[in-house]
Image (cartoon, rainbow, N blue to C red; front, side, top):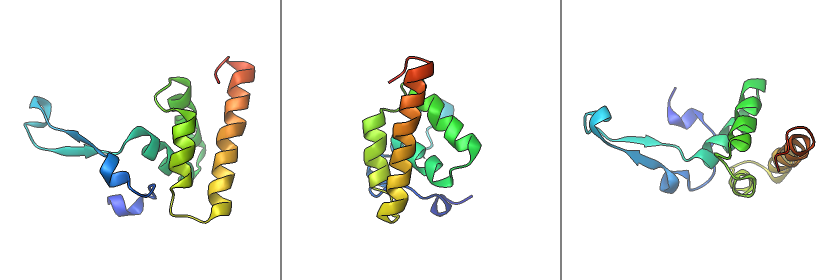
Length: 102
């Protein structure tokens, strides 16, 4: 699937992470930054994508505030972005109530 198929926050290219080492035989690969990836997953909003983002939050691989900033930078209308931010807020409350995460 080409990268153009993904919906990513504005400026994601500047935050992409370069990977080049012996494991890549010195070829260069570019990885989407974790908050940008999480925001893109929430755009798809499939069960597996929401579960993935929950794990990223629980394992502290993404910071909720930074994720919200990434969601606000999505090339979508304000209502859509607000729904995703509310999902994050609701998820954080649920996680705090059941697992002690905040």
